[in-house]
Amino acid sequence: MDKLNVIMHMNELRNILSYATNIGFFFGAGTSCAFGLPSIGPLTDRVKSSLSPDQLTWFDNVESSIKDLSAKVRITVEDVLNHLREIRELTRGRCDYDFRGVTGTQAAELDQAICIAIFKILKDDTEHADVLVLRRFFAWYEAANRGFIKEIYTTNYDMLLEMAMEANRTPFFDGFTGSYEPFFSPESIETFPGENDSTSRWIRLWKIHGSLNWMKKPVTAISEERIIRVGRVENPNNELMIYPSREKYNLSRKEPYIAYFDRLKNYLNRGELVFIINGYSFGDEHINDVIFNALRNNNRLYVTVFCYGDVQVDSMVSYASSFTNLCVAGPSKVIVNGVLKEWEYNDSEDKDIGSGMYWKDSEFQLGDFRALIEFLIENSGRRNVIEDIANAK
Image 1 (tube, rainbow, N blue to C red):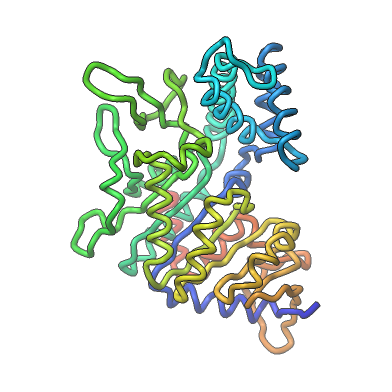
Image 2: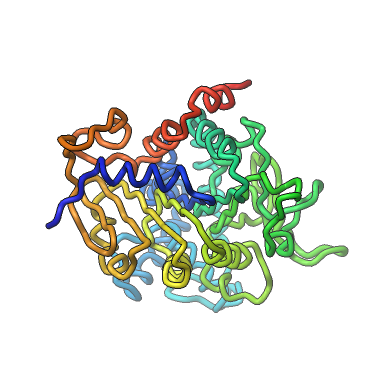
């Protein structure tokens, strides 16, 4: 296997970031794991341990159904949620119809129990997380005042990003508007703000899989059923809007999920853009299609994926071999210009005193979100300003 000098590659990345006119981010579950929140496997185990005996039986029945219908070895709580919602749709939520031993009413009860369990687990873990490092990331991003629209897309439904931005007093927008029960306004995210728009410097946060503070408000005398965003929630009173089932992606109504996907398509195809992906395992084909189609259609788009493990790099060889504007970097392997290579640290020609931020114990480190943040801050040359913002009370 060919080798790639990590110092030369990182110097090239520094130049790309220094001269980039537009930088955006996509965060997956791995970024939250860096701050102590559970990955999907441990989260699944913790959810199961919170269920009643009857609910656990239904959960196991759904797991068995998914294994029979797919080649998946490890079934996650998100797989179960998706399957439950399909059962609810097929049975119309009725108690006299069932699928593989789970009735419509049981599917609805288990769906609610799982969402409440996820809410409690992530809420507790989030409140105990140290968001100082995240505050430093947002201080860096906000300080990068180059006139571009700052956008973050994430599959995470925890509240870490919001907590860090609010601690920094960083303005951000998520497509919801209002104050009593903020509602989603698709029109507000269909266009990009101009330079004279007072909100153009706000960070855009698009939570593709929903959020712990999204609730489904039932039909009332004055409004139809809709998704609302609430403030800090102690106990959810309405159905949580996290991890939408596949049918949500096909609805004609412009719910947040659909609108966010449209925004991602437009954003990636809009022109020159450096798009950094961290903590995402490329397990959602809907998202993957958007990213890879944009790589084909926009030759001014450069996507770099930082992976925590080499397994993900290996799994992406077949995808990445078609693209010269995609880089996939893991601890010991990297895909550049469609070719899989091994990292090599060789400072005989080019020394880098800052290499400790991205190279340690003979491995590339930027798959760790914390290490990526440190690298971005150091590369900015504005560490003191960033630290002042992040540590302000």
